[in-house]
Length: 560
Image 1 (cartoon, helix red, strand yellow):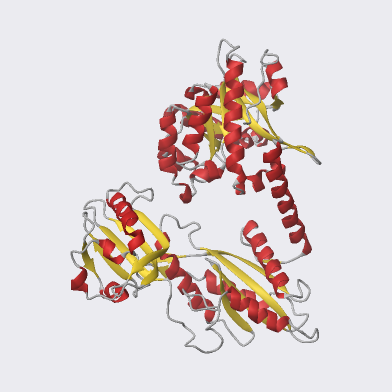
Image 2 (spheres, rainbow, N blue to C red; image 1 turned 60 degrees about the vertical axis):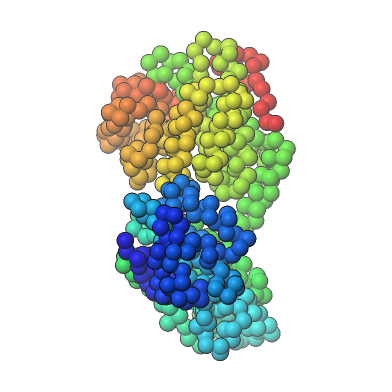
């Protein structure tokens, strides 16, 4: 076992190792000094001797679960703000990173205090409003200094500008970089950016992954100019964290007074808007303009109206048939969300889905979609000889082992729909997000008995990886491949290959975007079994869908 993991680059951190029974069998000098002991005094003691009394019992249970490999986090865990107890009884806030050796059951804790000595040495105004991790002045200090600079500012004097930079330290490096290196990386970024400081360019820490430069420059000078170039060059150069090279991705937004805000709060908010726009534009540096404010206000309006929509039950499900390409019979329905906005009328998902998906409201709406779709199709199936399957898309926030399996189980139990008749459609962007712990979620979903469908298959760089790692039952071929059939032979070859791949793996397929009889016949010739598209039906309200199924009047309100 490498005792230095994961603190290469942070040598002051303490390391404590415990055996399978929870007794300390190793600690380094930094850990002993942190807790006020000589190392020999702690050897053989239960780890709870270092935990504050009120938390000790709970910690013991969590420690036993982690040592047994039964903790939700698996073999690694990361906790900020955990409590520690020194020998004199005083408490200290810690950042604790855990790693379990699966072969021996031993657990290694890597700890450092959240309160670090000041880098400023007590001078230069850094004692008030200081970031404990980096020693840089924080956002409180930024607001204070910016207020002072803008108060009574002379328009003939150099203008004041803010440059926000926010780092995504793990983008594209999830397989190579452990999250435990986060603090070491932020300190390294701070050190590098601090070298850019001048009398006219002061650095501050902002949030978990952000930094801000407060700058002054001649009125009328092009912004951001050479300052931006220097910041980008500093962050683009590779870092070495934990013995591994790391190339960062980062967004940059900037705003200048008085054009973009005459007061500190306004200027900070507008620079933050520019930063958000930069991240949305694949990290292209972005300056503030009024259109950003309009877009944000529209998002806020949407979010407010979405909250009201949940309370007023303004959502409705439309259904689009999935058709057997040989018999022409409807074999399944995809449930698609629509919103009856009181002012804007019937809205398609493109008008609101991005905002809804990012909100916690998606949990309530997603739960309703499951219940409504299962209940409606279960009722229709009572009037059919051949039962229909219903396909339901899930929101990213639902894709959690403690949320989605339980929601599915409830919907099936309330509706009486058999699990085999429910397809759960999951997009690749959900699956590849490491925060979702997708393997555990897939295992829990498989246990419910439903079919798992990889939606928009073929459009993402990790589609084949998803197939190899997860128990998928069907592939939904993205409509872009069908739309490209007239552009050349390449799309035909791709569609044939996708069907051959699915057949080899024993997976079902649904091909989207079928709009003509010729395309339907071609997909059948390629070997696809099921098609979906405007050739048969556009998405239909439930009354229209019931008529298309030959069922009249068998509808239900499922929102409760």
